[in-house]
Image 1 (spheres, rainbow, N blue to C red):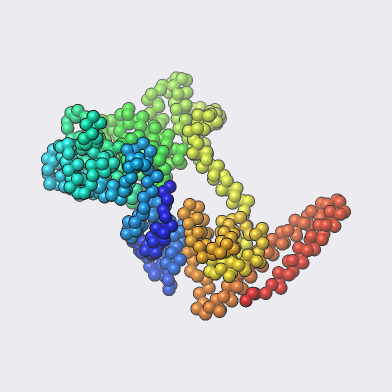
Image 2: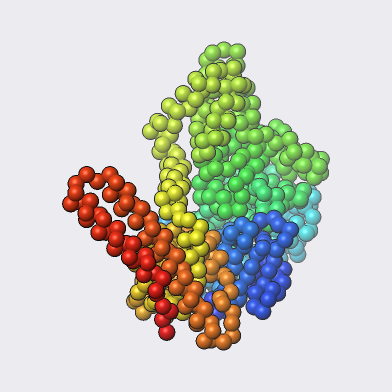
Length: 626
């Protein structure tokens, strides 16, 4: 992860008011003196349960329990990482984020001896995009313009996807960059110019081609894909930006910034093969379509889509290459927990040709007739192998079972295995036995390493919940304590002197309490609340989010009354927790006394029990401190 200086984060926090940021996404309604309410953008609801607290710069939804600071909201809403959220907010509020050049992509043409300014490179890509657009719209390249016209692409789509054209020239882009104040080396650094090894001269990478700008998740142009418009091209059909400091093709999905909203609304993404297929799907109102960028689909691209949805529909061609690509994509998507369906494109067609021949209804028909991945596999392998022969049945069974074995959810694996047994008229036990063997093989464990790690993490989380589960009254007491000690350092110091660490639970709230106490002891109480907010970005805890987003309690204007109420509340919570802890301890000791045979040990336990009982009685004599 890139390093973001603390002073830069502070500048963004100072400028990016959370109500202003969230209000740009959803309609906020004033609630009370200093809070806002809204319908939650993260789940469907009819009654507003989404709260924004500008005073604390926090949000929290009582429905889906998501919450956090302004960075967390942008991360959730845009489906981006923390660093990407920082850059989005920095761009919006005019804060300069210094670049960390140590984090460049390996293997690109940049080296430590060639420093560069990323912001200049982003601006250069943007200038080139406008340059290519101008060539197209002013018909300076009539061949590309005519090609788009023959494909029936409407002007609004051309503008939306910012399509352009490159001159049939060796130095058109180079001259434009030089005249715009950039160097040819910078143009080469973003992949738009190529250096001849023998002469050292540079020439344009993109010549006489249709230009597709490629965006990163933040909507910045990071590269280009250029399609030939010749009938019988001598060179490659597509020429793409190579790996650069901005462009890492395995981490980019074409049109994702345009598809984010569509994916959320449709609750699934459509994965196409190329740019024109994506554009065709968008033209047919499937605005949730994206495509891999200049490479086979990667695990990183799968994880990127996981930020937005857990359902994918694959829409690759029906030729042999398309079928093989679909099978490869399944091996990436299934271990990541996606529900996958397949849009079966008729042989010899693609989404663009179907749209031009049948209109949007043609694509809607194929979308509605999509197959669950299992049924697709069964259809594919049943055409490859003979279902009427034992060997054919074995091959169908083996190939489909390999895909089922990739699914992390054991219930889904069992369901699909039963379905496979039924389709092939096999005993369920035989299929389950083979599935278990397959999952135990070393080759499978290696391929499913990320799945295994996720399951272990889930199991660990579940066991953590069981081990650290506390009664409701203790949970509420600790939540009240956290609210109180965040409202003033004196309350945190009081708590540190009154409540032993072993009496604080190991739940997220208990851990937060201990963190605030430790920071108070070290003289860092002022930074405690901000530290908890930062923790939430990586380790979401709904209850912590809710507490941090809550208004300051109590709300009495009189400072003396407020302090008295907080002290009384803190004392009550301490008594509740101590009483629970001591009663439990007394019961444990009493059980030991009943089973103890040795008289000396029993006497020692009796004394311990008397001391604990005395401590319990003393709880009622604790006075409020001034």
